[in-house]
Length: 137
Image (tube, rainbow, N blue to C red):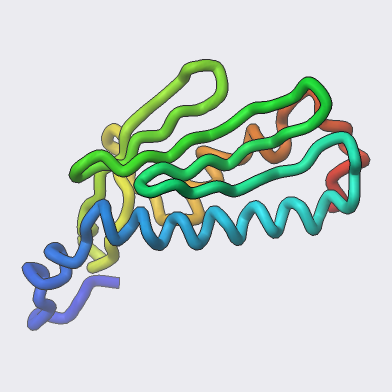
């Protein structure tokens, strides 16, 4: 939906900052870690963890001889993401035509849940060490 003609895009864009998005992202990532841990039950083999230190967030899986992380860092006007295997990318923020503040990676825009899915799905669900029976549908 397109905002009304009197939509104050200047104010909205000024509030659409990487810092504010990063703060919200931290809360949502912590909730995602809680959700995956509650779905997988109580496997003693591994666990998912959330850790924030200043402008850096780590979402990791840790277990016996296992430690993989996705790291999010705030860097001026962008959010840097480092995935397992030394892959990395940067996200900026943009005010979309529907008036919503979203993340932009390359030329694609993402809502927060889409961005979190893109960054955490492999860590949570697709790693080869993860037995399908350990994540309840």
